[in-house]
Length: 191
Image (cartoon, rainbow, N blue to C red):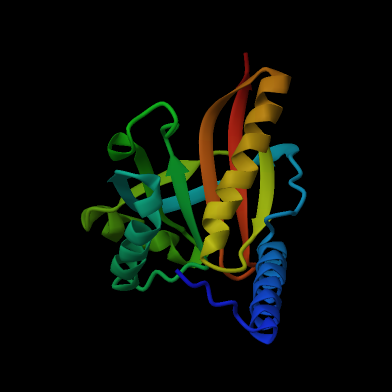
């Protein structure tokens, strides 16, 4: 069997293209925040009025369900710049098909008078009171930011909670389209 040796010029082109691919992937990852430092702050957070629908299934599908909820809410002239997800179960401890969440939008002051109409239409309306919380932020650069943010932030929040001996009473993510950031909020109680 004969082995045909590629011309040296072709090999150089392949190596250059491969190097460019690696460098591009690195800079894109840097842009997305893969290497960014995550900080955790303690503060009082809450005071939100939420409207949406409950969802049961893999959290990876929650974004698709959230888009459907946004579309349904637009029929009631609700166009908030902030959507949210409350995730009730730890996907490490429960089958993805059984994970429960509540997704929708944070109601703005001008939409509060629509609450009864929204309830009548079958939407769940809830309030998140102000409470002691640990909070972290992650920038929204692309649709990958939601996954990368969760993968980077939750381990830091969990480590912080364990070090302080806190128990989480609520896990909330607020997706602020206007300010292009995700706010991760874990309200807690001391053990």
